[in-house]
Image (cartoon, rainbow, N blue to C red):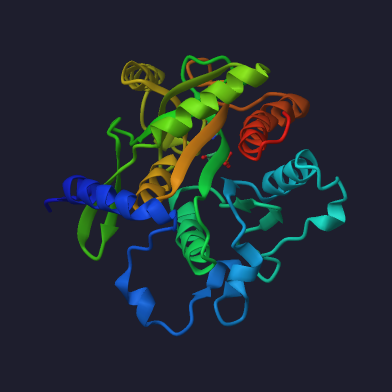
Length: 318
Ligand SMILES: O=P(O)(O)O[C@H]1O[C@H](CO)[C@@H](O)[C@H]1O
Ligand SMILES: O=c1cc[nH]c(=O)[nH]1
């Protein structure tokens, strides 16, 4: 079946949206929503009739997302303290406590949300988050994925700011089957935001940070060329050749959400970035065997960078 290449028409649409986005509002691209008298954000345990979403969220300016609920809670506590709101855990309650699908925490203008692992999980979360921001009349929101990844030829602990998310064929696109058609969407990210983040990381100067392509896969094991899954149908030479080809195509790290994240945020007019730390160099191995304290330190790096970025934007000292 011939894919629908959304590139051309969507690019044009994005230009239009950007013009329209002088208002800074989130752009919902679904005419059916206007016909609904109530919108239930089922996986958040929130809704337009049951919750006053503008009262709860209209001041949100930064949304940070990451796979693990514990990591996002830790980030919420960290940013709460960094913004001068104190370090009392009791001030950080899970807004999605009515459901165990995702966790959501708020610290002033910062919203921290977990998205689970993989494209389907983050995609569901993003549909509901983008609608939430729309219902709450949020303006000028920046959204950043703070995650972990496997590096290619990178020293573990390196922070990668994604310029473009690519698929397993190194193409800058995200493919989704809608009804029985394949829709292709661009995965380019905001260039200005990338440069701002890079500058921030140079200013804090605490760890190595680079800009590069991020490969987004549908699987952690075979899908990322690992030899240590329950199934493996290729040789170690095949794996090495593939990772070397990825590296030559500009891929510096591999994770599992960046493509749909970039595509959805772009289409809805949200300024978005992906910042992931590498936990290992995939040219050296497949198993993540770093000690717990080193893992904790690595996972903190994207958080430190994003906290500095947010504080800079809010005019607070870093
Ligand atoms: O660190 P997080 O945000 O969970 O992301 C990465 O880690 C998970 C795999 O361990 C995948 O979801 C991958 O994208
Ligand atoms: O190798 C890795 C490490 C973290 N997350 C991934 O998706 N891959």
